[in-house]
Length: 142
Image 1 (tube, one colour):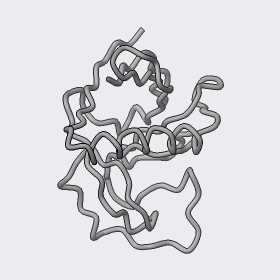
Image 2: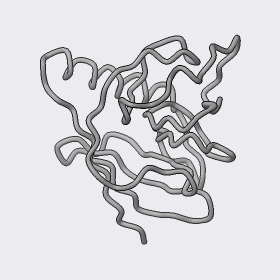
Image 3: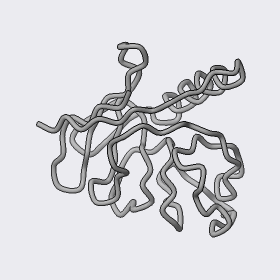
Image 4: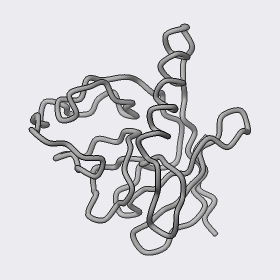
């Protein structure tokens, strides 16, 4: 479950929990975040990242993305394509992504790659065992 806890300016901070256990912190652009609700997580081969990514919208127009030579954690997607991904800031990120990491200060995450890799593997194992993984997003803004 993703609980959005604080929105200030363009930043929306949240906490990601699995079975009530805090897993990581999240960061979203408040101007491009997806609505609260239930989303079934799927793996889709992302052309831009040249790997499978955790997608919240299986109907995303992935054919609009082009493979880039260099992709960093904060590289934005060319279209609105909500997914869980590593990154440490949301400035000008209007692709609907949910960044994961450890909260450092307002509008910033640290260790995004380590946190993402751990979360990715946990989701991948659960799906490979035949379970449906659903992300529940709730707004609890203070």
